[in-house]
Image 1 (tube, one colour):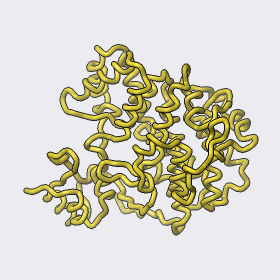
Image 2 (image 1 turned 120 degrees about the horizontal axis):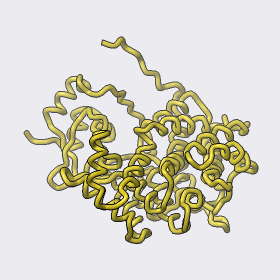
Image 3 (image 1 turned 135 degrees about the vertical axis):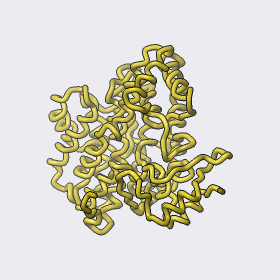
Image 4 (image 1 turned 180 degrees about the vertical axis):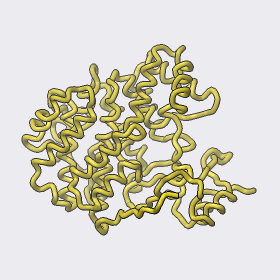
Length: 401
């Protein structure tokens, strides 16, 4: 039987292509890569069965939530922020500019913002007293869990912002600029600033020669800024629908992303790479991982069956910045071990773990990078949700069985 293209399958199901790929990611529908290696195809019989039932009766327990958004689109195995290719943005723009683009689009003219003399983007500075407060509440935590510093700092900064319920777009964007600048600085134990989010993150998380790693960290921040309606982003939008303030919305996202199946996936990939003390042990370590968990973290992505373009971009950047050495050999050996039976490509989690391994970051650092980057997208989704009817997410319960 002839296989259907994505357009044909979406038309038969009466859904958008983004929803079609969401069905694939949740296991509701299966896809295969066409012989040309560029398109996804679908079994016509499976699509027809799904169309008749509305959804497969044996589908995994999940909720299909479709949200109309102008922010991020994943289509034809590419990621776009407000219509601009995220890969191109990662090569040409700073994280602050991409955040402005997500928040305000062309109206903000993010590429027209000037740079301060110290290298920070205009307007991206902590509010007076914010860093001191964040340091005070975070210092008892220490450096063992950098992502926890973000969670604690956001809660503390919210408590002293009397105007946090000003939900107008300009007000939320202003909160975003000062808050993200503060959070990047707060990751550093000394609370200092190097001028710019990526530079501060590098100074906080890279033990030595951190200037060298600013570019790949900047690229990672841009590539991770948003990813359509991930679980944490849905949590943010649910909170925003109640008209929770921007800080509370970010806290909702951080709560969801803290789960081991979401934001810490890169930490598990980092731990795997760190366990391979020499390339010759890669196959044994991968085999142990499969025995214990049944899968290898950081490889494959249901939305990118042809390979995660974010991983490709970040890996290419690492190849330019990092010298050939043990870290590169370990990453190559792990990928070779994973691909011995079936060709599987790395996703952004493994690329982020590779960055951490190259730069000598501690375990847990990748979750902090992921969370800080995603704050930009979460704020954009909160701003968009504030314009919708309130309390629109209301699920209904039915008796089990």
